[in-house]
Length: 372
Image (cartoon, rainbow, N blue to C red; front, side):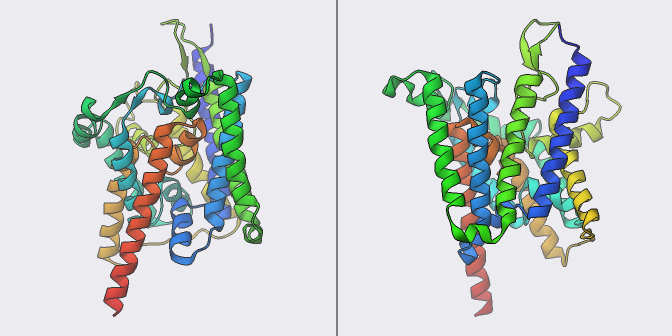
């Protein structure tokens, strides 16, 4: 039987360490998914978008290699369950895309900016975390559960919702072969699109960002799905120790922000403990802070007007609601969930991009009207 306390501490400290790496390099390379979309929409610059796609490709290849080796099982994650809540993925993704545009960055970028001294990001963090919390357990959960995830708009599949499982019957291939085959094809297509472009190499940080962020996601799966996966000595059921869901998890930043707010609110409650997700939130902020201090780029930033603050608060609330409803953010669904080849993750990723793009287009047209 495993030593539960030791195993849980190992997972949590590993999450903190990976979070530090994530935050340090996200700050160093200016990795920003909202910025990636903005660069493409407003300037036609694909550099940071290619970095994001490279991270997805690396995560897919590494994650599915671990699964093929038998180190982890991709059916042990909430991304791949048989309940395909398509409306929640779409609405949540659209809300998150709009929100991260108004709030000047996604959940990951918010944490990075907090570490760099951005006071606007502190406000976004608090509102985003509270909105995520009430979407998980409070008043917003009524809409999420009774409308967007209602049985009438939920497809109950007979298999996990990963592309390999969905394509197994039509192709007739065994699941292991189909899984690694699809992973190699999709990941190499994404990696090739990213790196086989001479403009991409004008900024080496984009390559570093994609490699490190994708690698951290893979490492997260290994920690929670292999090192932390063991038999519960009380129930005799296998589970992931140290995670909130008791399933294997990797990097994601919306629900974990809610768990962090809950931990602070119920600090004296012994049932509320630091988990993998909470540790990664702290890790990202501290990793970003360490980079900012080391490079003397730490500086206080604040809102320039009440309107600016209101815009960021609305964006933060939309991100909190949308991220929980879509079961992830640009990292949680856009890289971590995508790495499992989950159909829901792919749909959420597309919805986030559409929501952000539409908002940026609207903002541009509004500015043009005001300028004219």
